[in-house]
Length: 215
Image (cartoon, rainbow, N blue to C red; front, side, top):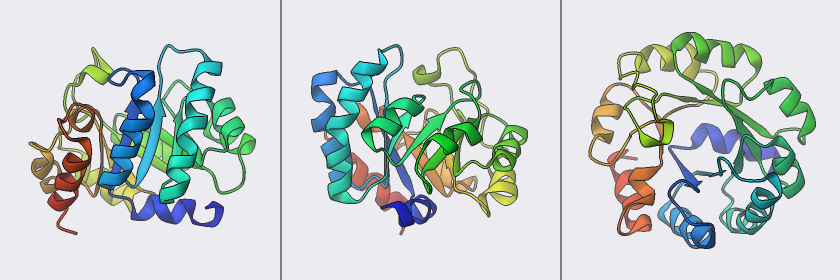
């Protein structure tokens, strides 16, 4: 997948996350399988407040599932884990270190994503060499407790200034019920976390979301 990671990110529309804030560790493979079967284009493992060795063991179980579907597998925060398990990339928050240093530790062509919360941060991530950005949270969300939603007003600006060069994935409180509003504001790609993970049928929910993109 090395030569096509960047291309797969560019063509992605729906980014899914196996988030241990919502998913028990024992259920991660089943949840990842449902997300992949439902049609997520990128899959991330997010395991806040867990030991690196634990995250590594969990990631090793998810890598083959993503490989089988040719879906890029991303590790949140931990460059070491991404390196050890042969992930397709890493996603870093604003306080999680240099994108260039992360890229240097991973194989050529790996994806290095950055969370951004304003147009200025989005432009800075582009200058830093991000492969893609997350932009949000658009709405208040338990995933980012205490952080207010930034709203939809800046989506078009970020798509115009950054989105033409790297993929912009809008994130934060996005659910099937407000996705049309987000797309109407100019979003091309989204990350949906709890809206998928808490669905009665994760795979079916993914498929319904993909239909909203009118692909």
